[in-house]
Image (cartoon, rainbow, N blue to C red; front, side, top):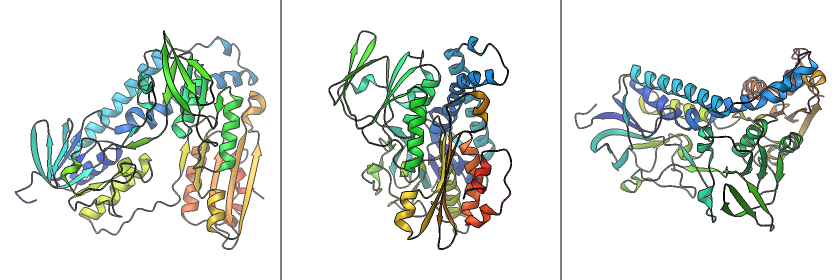
Length: 448
């Protein structure tokens, strides 16, 4: 490193992508700094995937208690729920993970700054009243929940607020139709909250396969969630201890809490980007090339702040591609095809590859295989959940283009299938594979 620089790399943002880049770069002998204004681990660890999945687990117990009666267990109805205990146990687990991130960074040799960093120039960063020169700068500041401009927007909360509620409301209105909205609808409903979901569009989870999203909608309604599509919120008003949500159809809803889950925008405010040549797209996300370089040659960006695929594993993979580009042979390019993903809705959705609509647009001759059935667990459990699986195949090559599943353990099952699809598996490979019986996953190798 030249004497004119304090660091080889200065990372702004200690989420999954930033931490991976910082510690892996430091471990190869580079002098690295990483700055974080909040808790280490970013959205995923603190107000995203991890606490959300813990809450999903918590919300599933009532159905498990109910199912247990059919399996010979008694007195399931005597169970009670303690929100404070769940919230505080979750917080303790997050604090443990924060500590792990701190130890990983310390052990790698990266220098951790706690505070808000600002870019003062192409190779200059200020934080806590001091300036540091860095040969390269990485922006990994993630995204931030977005609430549209409506009267009373300050009365609503976002997903960031959900994990530390002082008390659980009796009624809640959720605005949005994406994965965060449907996941929190399932969580609140499972914890006993009267839950209504309002979405301006005509289809929940619009970027996913339509057959699957219809199954999710039906499953949510069966579990007691009220869903209003093609509906807009015009304003929110406070009336004593309650909120009134006014709708564009002239109706209004009285509730204790309004959660807005209407998307996330790149967290690029107050970064000092105007001191650089960096350009943003229409969603305020940073524009980068295939090597994650911005219009400023010394500054890079990865993760949600570039708004390509907003998933934690994607940010981590982008970090490894960036490290290879900066400090190794620069042969790796990120492949954004066939990325598996899950929505921890209730029922759960997981998917990899093309939807039927996408496959129809890209291929001339496809076949679609479906299976819709009651899972074995529900036979004695007397629940209403069903399982739906779907496979899309290119008839010309016999290659499997996409697999989708709604039901118990969908994420666990699709993760394995994603490997096969990434490897270019054909329908004949699935057909020749012996199934594990009895299991839900065997349906994928018996589709006809």
